[in-house]
Amino acid sequence: MRSVPIYVLAAVLTFAAALSVAAAWFSVSAIENATRKAVTGILNENGKSWVEIHSDGMQIYMTGLAPSESERSEALSLARTVIDASQVVDQMTADADFMLTPPQFSIEIMHNDTGISLIGLLPASMDSVAFREEISEAAGGVPTTDLMSQADYPEPEGWVDMMAFISKVLKRIPHVKMTIKASRAEVIAIADNLEEKRQLESELLRIVPKDAELAIKITTPKQAISPFTLRARLDDDGLAFYSCSAGTESARDRILQTASKIGLNGDNHCNIGLGAPTPYWGNAVIQSINTLAVLGGGSLSFTDADISLEVSNSASRKKFDMAIGELKANLPEIFTLDAKFITLPAEGTAVKPEFEAILTREGNVHLDGDVGDIHARMMIESFAKSHFTSDIVHMSARIFEQLPDNWTMRIMTGIEALSHLSNGAVKIAETGISASGETGNRNARADISSLFETNLEDAAQYSLDIDYIEKLDPIESLPSLDECEQMIVLAQNQSKIRFNPGKSTLEPNGKAIMDNIADILLQCGEMRIEIGGHTDSQGTEPMNQRLSLQRAQSVLNELRKRKVLSKSITVKGYGENEPIADNATEEGREANRRIEFKFIRAEPLP
Image (tube, rainbow, N blue to C red; front, side, top):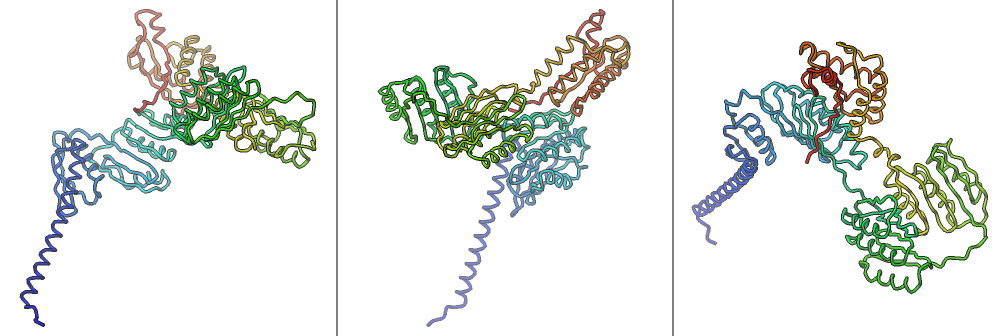
């Protein structure tokens, strides 16, 4: 075998090495180009075309003359969103003409399940490491991504208070986005429900620094509804909804419009949520309601895709068969229909078992009726006391030997339904169960309907007659901010807050008006309010400024004496600077000497 000359082997090896070096060089060059292109792209998209990008291996060098220190910081933050911060080398400078103007310090905080991201510009005097650790601790120790930079300028007024505000918000809201400046906070968050949304809005107004603007946007996601139900009955009094579910606002509106045409009565509330078994849920409901109308009455029950429809012999059997046949032909395939034509039994005199649970307006619970034995009685009484305060439950029961199956379960289901009402009654009979009464919970009918659907052996055998009363709703019954402001204005129109001439002490007869205003504020709950003092033009301007502030403070002190929470109330003296009438007349001067209550509103974000 002939051996390969050594110079041939050397040539082959040299060629292979050169090829490897060339391949590596091209790979590195491709990575550099891709990184440079990505950084340049995001900078240009955000108006930072003045930045020049140079790459050297894995490093990106940023050069250029920034219009301001703030612009330089924003460009640096943008680049760090594309590549790791350790790979960015900042060689940018800021225009000297702008260096005398302090930059706009701001922080954007995003908190979600993966942790916290911090982007923005901080004063150089701030310990950014300590701040990051404080933020992480406030959010429960979650990891923090730091994309902040710093500029050597003094902290603006209010900056420290706003940093404390950030921690307070993170302790309260698990998913939030904030944009924070020295004098303004923007907060975007999600609440689980309407009640939590209102609580968050109120709490944010309380904890934001007093001199800062607040803009908020809190949304509530659709609730998950399971099972998806609708329960309705049409009789001589019209159509009544016991529960109503819809997947979209459009479906809800169409259902309610159809129901209104055939005489919908009572509260027309319909829950919107996730969980509809098909996009055609609304169509099936509308077709079934129209069938009820054709038959002249009956009951209708939807549980997901299962439909139960009952009509008594008040309609003819032929008409019933034709209407049900047409409904079955038009329903989407996913739905199953169980239609019953019920012949009403003749009236009898046989004694039937029954049980009734009543919740009075005074808050007492009375249980009376038939139970199987002493053990069942004890179980029912104990169950009632677990849902209501023990000392308000009063029970009297009879032993009835022949009871339907699951009678005790029916009673306990009825008691649990009663706990959803402010007052009312639940009646359990051999043929079914009925609940009636008043509630301050818009979802009570749907909740009770779902409870019956789940626990009763025949979901069709129940009826509901429940009225939503707004004044019983702990949220809806609270006066709105506008209503509170109007009540304060009306109170002052009826009786003005007056002071002794030239002093900040209230006139002796000022007790009544202060009592009235305190009652209004206690009814409205804690709100962010400014008490402003105003004077006429008599006297010197500095004196009037001081006197107006002292009078506003006196009003606040009087409210504190009456147990009004004052943490979110501020006072301000306007002196003679904002007259509402002519100071040349006594009547005008009297009008200008006044106290105004300004209710501070959060600015809604788009």
